[in-house]
Structure formats: C-alpha cells, structure tokens
Length: 143
Figure 1 (cartoon, helix red, strand yellow):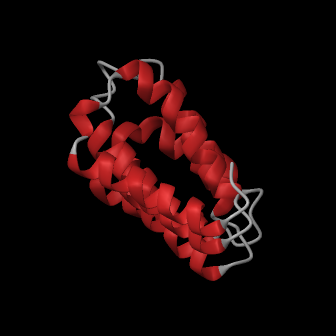
Figure 2 (tube, rainbow, N blue to C red; figure 1 turned 90 degrees about the vertical axis):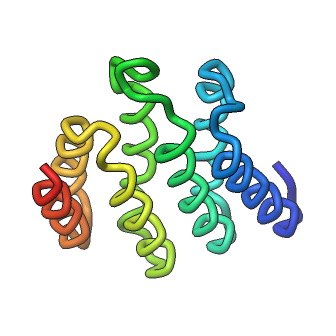
C-alpha cells in the first residue's frame, strides 16, 4: 500500500515480470498468499495500475498456477480470482473493461466449468451483459 502511484505501477510490473519469467519459482504456499494481494490492485484508484494488473493476473493464471488437479482441486482459488475480476468487467472505464476482458479470455481455460458458472451468474448483474456473452461464446468455441 503506497500513496505514490509510481510505486504501485512499478510493483505491478515487477510482479508481472516475475510471474512471466520464473513462474516455477513460486511455490503453492506463496501463490495462495499472493493472488489476494494482487487482486487488491484491481480496486486501485489509478486505471493504469488496474490495467497493468489485468496483464499480471494473466501471467499468474497462465504461467504460475500449477494444473488445477494439483493446485486448485476445489476451484476455490480460481473462483475467488474470477469473482473479483468479473466485477471489473462492468467498470465505467472502457480501458479497464478491455484489459479485464483480455485477462478473463485467457484465464477461462484453467477451469472452464467454474468459469462458465461464474460468468453466467455475473451476466444478470452487469449493465453490459454483452461482454459476458462474448466470454461464454469464446469458451463454448474452445470446448
């Protein structure tokens, strides 16, 4: 937690590069502690931090998360991340929307069953359900 946006931007970039370049260096215990802290940045007051965090979350799910059968057997971690992220898919900022959409599109494969259930639920609460529809369509095409 820092009042200086430059520090928050830099720390977001550091986590992205760590997750992208050396995902196997983070064990499951640390992953479980890390992802809630990363998600907090989606609530940042600066849209640039939120947009960069979407990219960081993509690296988290696509590179650092071990297979769900080994790490997230119950789907709890993935569900927590998706629920928190889906809220931001309906953000007033179009740039944030696009970044979150790109993240969700990449993350969907991790646990499609949980993903479809959460997106379907979120759809009824969004002012713009078209983004949820687009995600559901993408997932159905991958299946």
